Length: 76
Image 1: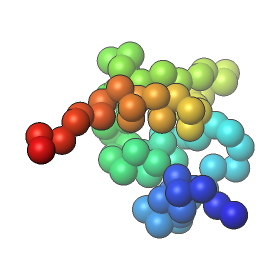
Image 2 (image 1 turned 90 degrees about the vertical axis):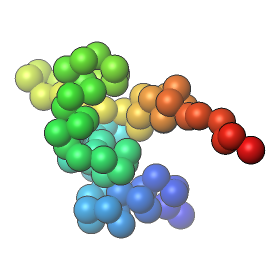
Image 3 (image 1 turned 180 degrees about the horizontal axis):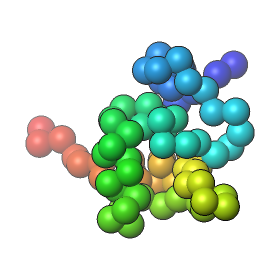
């Protein structure tokens, strides 16, 4: 059974990470944002990533931490 995050990736761009690490496009789909925004977050060191050679990859656990850090309580 697919997790909700895997389903979101499939829905957004038809992408599904082939391993535990995602490229910019897959991370953007996971976060529901643009690749450009993910690149900006990485360059500003606001998003944790793994360098594999010259490639930047994102772990879903790191993306989940990013999401949790930016979660805001409702006003009600």
